[in-house]
Amino acid sequence: MNDPQEHFAHCIQVFGGVTAASRRLGIDERALRRFVSGERPVTPTLLQDTAKALDALIAEASAARRAIESA
Image (cartoon, rainbow, N blue to C red):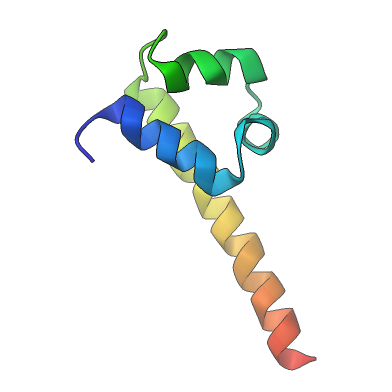
């Protein structure tokens, strides 16, 4: 995805939607909707913060998977 806004919108869906992403990113839901809609520009810093939050989600999901596998 070459378009930062489109890529950001996809990441919001990976988090499970705007509400879940809002909690993970510490950003107001209305602000997130403005980024997703293109009303506000998606900055490189926002994308970096999103990447860090996705890494944390991956770590949590991996730990949950390991717990299931060991049960």
